[in-house]
Length: 178
View 1 (tube, rainbow, N blue to C red):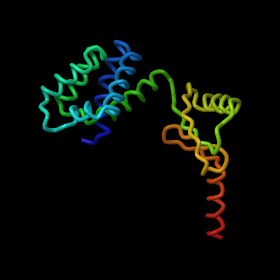
View 2: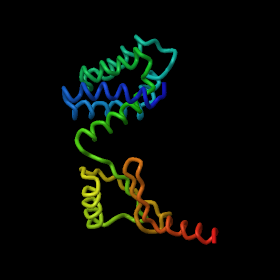
View 3: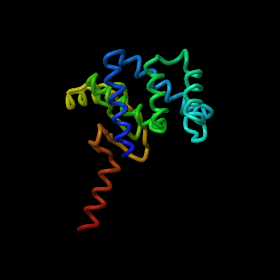
């Protein structure tokens, strides 16, 4: 089975449980768990090492996260370990966050510009994106000088490229085909 499909299935199951219990809390704990695994090589080693037994992994993870994670998230982690799916944790967390955003009617817009946007530009862009999508928008901004000028926006699979670099590329292409 594909990694994305596995992550989707587990994330969906946790999401459905989280909606019944505490979506915000479980999402925060899942992010905390992922952050700990990403930033702590010893925790990652224990979780991912193939020669550490499943029971040892569960015991160590339960000790590490005893006061940090709810029973729901600890049980979910134990389930992943039991089913040997702990390697999918990061992808599961990413899919879970997307599902939570969808439930909250939030869309993420990645905005790249050559220079930082002014406060006014950000507000206008935010309002326009909210109007276009009909959703609450979370903007993730990135400065990329190679864009020369303008803005490139990505929302899901959709990309709107209004950068000078893109326009120059199109001019080059049209001149080379002429």
